[in-house]
Amino acid sequence: MSRAGAWAWIVFGRQTICDWHRLLSGRELDLPRSGVVFRPRRKAFDRLVRIHEEAARLAENEPATFAHPEIGRALEQELIRSVVAALTPRNGGVEPRNLTENA
Image (tube, rainbow, N blue to C red; front, side):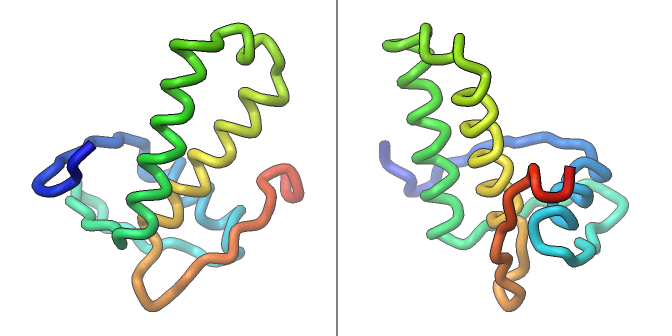
């Protein structure tokens, strides 16, 4: 897939993203109250796309994989980590923690 000029939409509630960021980084994420367009770092964007593509491939070619709850949960957590990393300011890297550590 060519990423030149590509657009992608991911929509989450503001509080959801802030909660995920706090769980993964231990810090608050200060998002504006109104909608905003983010331009994620290339590395973070590429990782998010790779994980999404793998999820789509599994769903299409190996749907029985999702019968195992731990696989679905692991994939969901990787997608969440990727979204949070893409929203993290360039100068404030996140070292993600496992979501279940704080659950």
